Length: 177
Ligand code: FES
Image (cartoon, rainbow, N blue to C red; front, side, top):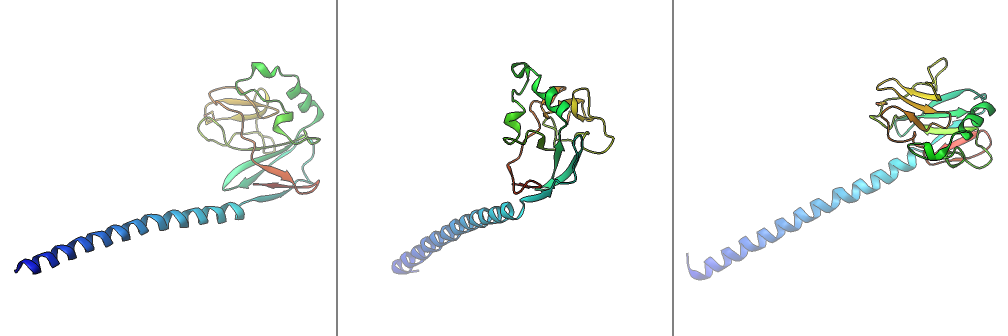
């Protein structure tokens, strides 16, 4: 190989290395972008509308939001009273019922149906299910008990049942997400 040929060959190797890096760079950027747009699509498509007109005071339903259970509960005046009678400063995750519901609609308690301990689905939203000693929800996995505002009162769960983003599309339809 002459010296000139040697230089050309090195140049070629350098150029090849640079374009490989360039391609790898593109390879990294593309999945990120497509992941971002996919999740935006998923988010838009996965808001859930729930007709609440048939849920009587004292009843609850289980719905699904982004593949997870959601509890929609129509609290009785007594359950509202019980929630409001609690000294909030004594709670593990201090929140009032008012903070966990929409103004003027404190009877509608809408939460994720996912225990904040290890993610089991608590009982209490289905007909005849145990509501636990605080009258809200009871997680049978390790005994977490939630009150009528779905606040954690006993057991290993660290947090209240999560209140998802939602709004009232009308008096009888709730849009979650
Ligand atoms: S997952 Fe609910 S108490 Fe453990």
